[in-house]
Length: 213
Image 1 (tube, rainbow, N blue to C red):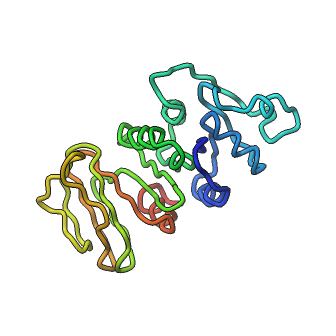
Image 2 (image 1 turned 90 degrees about the vertical axis):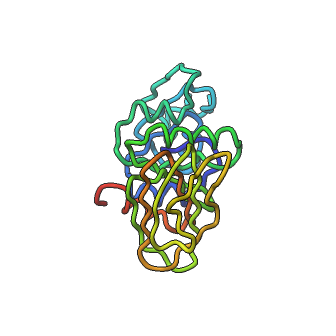
């Protein structure tokens, strides 16, 4: 899914290698048109889609299905998630720019806990920790854990183990932990815990979270 926040064409094109069906959340279609990438559909309240682009008949958006969802209680990202039932979603253009939009996107990731949703930013990939997550990481790789709610977890392969810690969004958090090298394992048994890794591990994260690609 492509949103209207800060986004790079290279991030989108790499994401399409793993999740080839592109859906734009409202203003995300402006990015797609600029990069000459045709989405399968556009979903949202259409308050950010360029009128000039939507009116053109020979542009990348010409003939693309548009689903207008007039629901101000949900963001365009959540509107997309409510319509598209994919088990794996990579979100580009939902981090950066406005902080309230970033927080709303992270909230959506946790609300849709039954799906694998990975948000891609310039520096990070962010996802909700599933019950068990395992990934090989080089020693010293930054691994930040941020509780969206109260959360408990166990870990292997982290410099500072997290077993027995009471994570709280207004208390203990887990920023700037680090992998010890080799297999890292995080077992989350209560609450919503967001995992943040360096951007370069997008492909590895998608393979670890999603169906075989």
